[in-house]
Amino acid sequence: EVQLQESGPGLVKPSQSLSLTCSVTGYSITSNYWGWIRKFPGNKMEWMGYISYSGSTSYNPSLKSRISITRDTSKNQFFLQLNSVTTEDTATYYCARGTTTVTNWGQGVMVTVSS
Amino acid sequence: DVVMTQTPVSLSVSLGGQVSISCRSSQSLVHNNGNTYLSWYLQKPGQSPQLLIYKVSNRFSGISDRFSGSGSGTDFTLKISRVEPDDLGVYYCGQGTQYPYTFGAGTKLELK
Image (cartoon, rainbow over all chains, first blue to last red):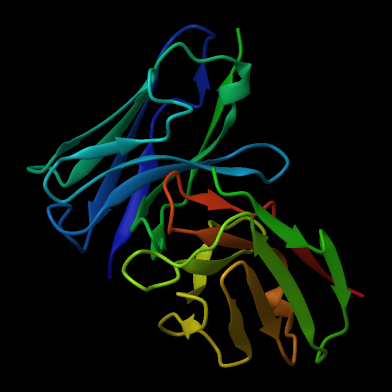
């Protein structure tokens, strides 16, 4: 059974970078597509971007200048970095498997941007 | 971006009852490959979202046949019959046809 687990700091200061890790078990990240989705307070959800089985990436144009998704295949992990965060980046961040259809979600990590 | 409009925002239902949730997209969700990537997800309280329905009408593994999806083009519906306590939460539609992929704003299902 595939399982995803996010980890990272729950509090980030404005203008700093947000860095999260998604650890995957039960499935190799060298297969399929792996992404990051966030849910803002009030229920709005946003696709942030994804990394493919080959390592290619695609980002939401609304974030393109600030986002980077990378991976470590030896650890079966992929990562999110979001630069120059503001309070508007406060959200619960989910890592996920699949793009056109999200078949598996991590438990989510709540990140607050505040000084 | 494709805008996904879900209605209603919230629903009250009696146990054993039936409900429908509507999802409309601002553009057709028929992909160039002929597939329509419209999914339904349920987020139960305190949990992450889970996939219920994919490609309009296909139930995901382990999902009860009380859940059914229908629609085409830009108009889609999720029906839940014989509502059980475990069905309560926020339902989202999501499109995977046009990037960036987008979600509806959610429909909260509550007990009457």
